[in-house]
Length: 237
Image (cartoon, rainbow, N blue to C red):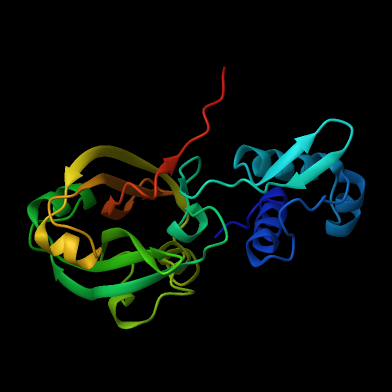
């Protein structure tokens, strides 16, 4: 399992401080030279981390003044990179999960095709309601090949994160994901789990995630309520 690049470590640490409140909105970050000395890296590495924070709108750069923690962060989920729900969530409302099921099950035909296994083969199934600030935001139904994570259904997730569990417990190196999004109407069961009215609108997202060897490690369908939009930054060429 490869180590995260240094700029990613710096980015993750600063994001953690922002979300915990250690770096409050409007706080001026130390300069690049000071951050480079603090983390023991080059200024270029610090600049990469700051560029990523800027892209995620976690900070605001002001010419001649410095870099400040953004105090107008939108509530939503950032899809610029492959990461967990917890890391996608913006703002300081906090996220949590309610596990609906965590079990092994026969793979339905659609799931089997996505995972590259036989229909009816044993796979892991993890269904969760994801909450932001205590409010249901999304329903996720994840399927993972049994060969990728044999004990997934028998052990708790690390920090409640499927991606962290796959990476740290099972040695999976996540590489990329294919994702599609479409409008959908919630079924009675989905609406009940999300504490909203049946037939309401949601954004249905299907994601197939691949490891470093090209193997399929996850197929997830999620339904996200309109109050929690997906946020993208699109750069010009």
